[in-house]
Image 1: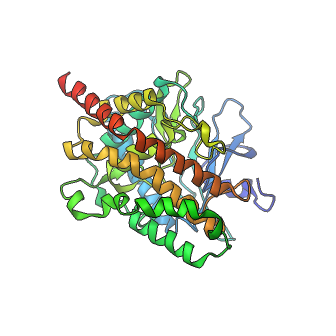
Image 2: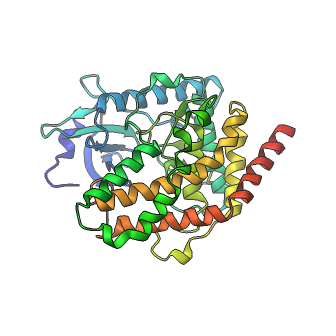
Amino acid sequence: MNKSINPEEIVSHFKVNFEFISAKAFGSGHINDTYIVKDADDSAAGYLLQKINHHIFKDVYELIRNIWLVTNHLRAKYKALGYDEVEKRVLRLIPCTNGDFFYKDEEGNYWRMYCYLEGTKTYDVVSTEKQAYEGGKAFGRFQSLLSDLPAKLLSATIPDFLNMEKRLEAFENAVSTDLKQRVAAVGEQIRFIRERAEQMCYFQRTENTEGLPVRITHNDTKFNNVLLDQNDEAQCVIDLDTAMPGYVAYDFGDAIRSIINTAAEDEKDLDKISLNISLFTAYTEGYLAEAISFITPKEIDSLMKGVMLLPYMQAVRFLTDYLEGDQYYKIHAEDHNLQRTNAQVQLVLKLEESEEELASIIEQVKADLLMD
């Protein structure tokens, strides 16, 4: 932990009754700083302490309110449906001593705490069909259980987060400004983005979204945002900072982006990037098994639009950040965001080659479920 931060002092502002021992960096998130906090009782699970990136999440009150609404609703639904060990299935925010669910320190940093769910694991890269299926179940169930909570109750924690038109506007501004004099070296990537710009704005066209429900969606469904138990069965969906109104296709597409890729999202060797169709099929089966109870035919038809959109959008976001001087994503090397961009571009190209095959798989899974 940063030596200028006193974790014990920060923890003292939360309603936890334990003897503080340590706080160590935890996880691989790009945005917030996360630490696992342990106490003197070795048998205790401990807590997760997070410094919220308030430069990205500018209204921390609304951010925490969204998470509180979502987790309370999920907890109530799980209990009503008779699920066992509900506390292992839903994140729990720890209140502060003043009744809030976040603490603002003297330097203006915002902090929150969750109960740590011990005995769980995550994967950055999916390796088995069971993992993919369980990931699909997790996000399908997440959407299903929230389908009766009005989306209008939640705020947009990052306005226009998945608005492709706005992302392209920011991208074009970064190109024209060329803050770090990097544009000349990325002409090929810029052309790739511009050639597909109009078709990727599908969800910003009213003729396409008429009759398409706006629901509460996760909006960051990469696979490592699902906690699995030791048997690789889905236990809990995490990282709820972007839980807000959206289209189900966004969640489906972002999950597929991380599952179907045979390599990491920042893979440097583009030859390693290909599509794992069996994992796509398994995720689709798990997702629709849970979502079929609420999802509409038009939403199912939109899922492939999400599959094509999200890796493209991620390429735009990575390249925009690269051109702006790497202000948004944490990087581990000077060209890390460019490396990420190239990997996502390659993934889009592979998806384009197999678009018809993937669409037919979705249709077949849907047909099989409706026959059962």
